[in-house]
Image 1 (cartoon, rainbow, N blue to C red):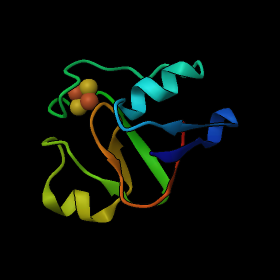
Image 2: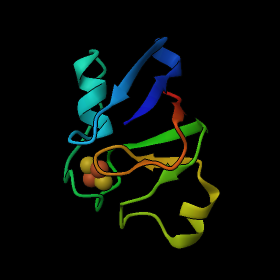
Image 3: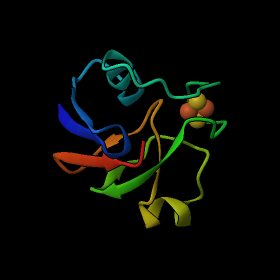
Length: 87
Ligand code: FES
């Protein structure tokens, strides 16, 4: 797992291997707007303040993914032990 800090909400949660970031955030009462839940539509994009996402979506271009400043929380994970999101 990895830690996700929801900076604007002042909360953090550990994302387990069998859940998505969105599900983990939901457990601590943070609801993210979602639609496709498959990394296609971009509805669930969140701003990344710290850490490097493991992008699993097909919404962002490769260039956008390389900037590591947005993450699709319905499907993407983390390459760093901790991600700080502006949510
Ligand atoms: Fe569609 Fe995450 S809900 S990309």
